[in-house]
Length: 151
Length: 151
DNA sequence: ATAATAAACACATTATATTGTGTATTTAAG
DNA sequence: CTTAAATACACAATATAATGTGTTTATTAT
Figure (cartoon, chains in turn purple, orange, cyan, yellow):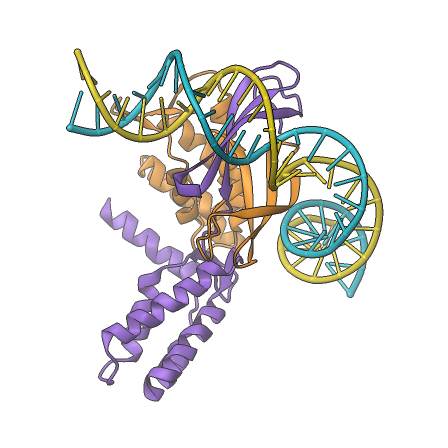
């Protein structure tokens, strides 16, 4: 590993300890060239889940959006909140455990539909028909208008 | 290192490569217990940078705040997560390499705007408008008009 | 569409990191 | 101000990671 002080490309480990109950490894390194010491951490690759929509735009996965979408689909249907919550938990876990950094909105929609299919057929059909989103420059203009009016 | 899947506390390295010109080490690990694989990165400990805000109050530089601000600006825009991440990395590196332990929030905002200008004009205008809090509304509208006419 | 780049995978050989034990020092908390 | 926790440091014995080479797949750019 490159030395942060002199930029030399080799350093050796002089101490190595697990931290945070094994979640990380802290290493103390020493530069081969300048002998200066520094600390490093080995961490598990962070996987922020990003949703890629049909128009290729991206946004952070929002659990509550998914929850609300599924809840709307289940309106006046015999599906308990607990069941929806469980379904959302399972979908979220699926996204976290997949090592894809980006997931398509279509894929999430499919996961949601799979769950709804098992929960309630009517809710499933509703969701399937509503799961469409179009965003363009007009959305942007709306946001701007809102910001301007606040001023 | 603890397995992110089953939580078992031992895993072994099956591949190890330097990345980013030796700035990091990427390792591919396999859980001793469940055999599932995951990726880790060894990175140099970040030296805390202090941000001086407009009201002269100070706080530790929070990378994720900058990331989120830029991500918000890019919301529903065709800017990949990787590009934002790269921009944030470069800004963070700039801050780390500056000799000053303290940086103004204004300076960070300018660095972010410079990056966004190259990534996406709409994102840039959004960020700039929020960041400058509409001090010069006409300049802002001019930029917007320019963007719309290009469409 | 395709070329270039990066990540994932495999495997063998060499070299280096890990771990226990112990002390000292710094940092955070009461 | 004192104590607990985390970090830094040292060293020796053992186990594991690093590296070269090469193939495959996935991602990004042209």
